[in-house]
Length: 371
Image 1 (cartoon, rainbow, N blue to C red):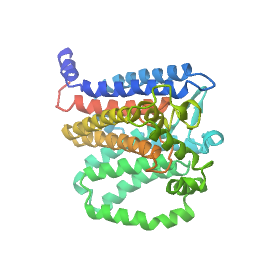
Image 2 (image 1 turned 90 degrees about the horizontal axis):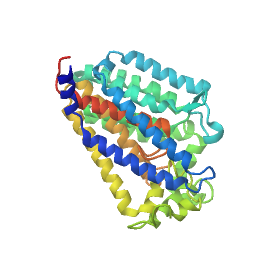
Image 3 (image 1 turned 45 degrees about the vertical axis):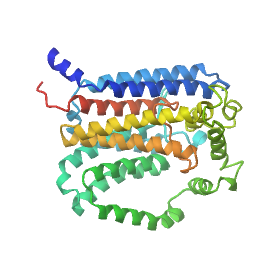
Image 4 (image 1 turned 90 degrees about the vertical axis):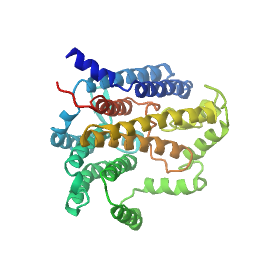
């Protein structure tokens, strides 16, 4: 057993772990800067962030102890439990008073956002279904079953409402289908249907605040002191950083409190202002390495289930990275999506670490080993 475990350990991608660790350490520094003028002080935020990182790495170690294929045997219970969590949010959720939507569940003194973990559960379920139906994925019956399987959690999240997370599900679901061999005609049909359905969504699906976000995205100056305030201040922070930045803890948009949610959704803006183009470029390169390695692990997986599992995680992380950065520079509407491994937040950090744990698990077991 010791020899076999050593064989598995040798297959560990330590460069991926190092890459994640460096991104996390950058996050701790920027969270410290973003909260150093907070009324509660930065010490509590820093301790929580470091604790979240440590717990996340413990979760990775735990996930690596078992073969990821075990999860494929329990995909239906995982799917049922995931949707039950989302129903629980609709019944017992909280957060509307603080954030405008009930997306959190509180148990005792612990509060978490179930959708963060449900993303992982649904990726596992889709990976199992696609691995069993890879050769028939373009048959209408099979494709409709897969889409129906995905629509249920998306609908439960959409009514919270949480448009950003709903988009994340759509992205990794579509990405996994694409890798499974989805024909281009379905891609074109989906794109056309999305464009044609937008007027109907505008009239009957989107909430007023979501419509305001879209209008503000098109022209923030429509409401510069209201709905457009966040993006205007964010773009000012990003632009003022120039090449080298103002220096850590020296950003005026950050220090003087003009930048909202600066330790969470707009932490990239803080980094751009204080570390400049060179600082954020370094972060982007680290993210590129992360995504490249995850994609390579998906390509080299020993089976379809592992390949789709790593693919889903790759698309999920790519969406969050792109959506957050694009949001802060005005390329996307404000969706409230944090930046992976950098933004402050316990459950988001833990869920992303768990996702990386699954990818590392697939990589460790890319060759068949008898236990």
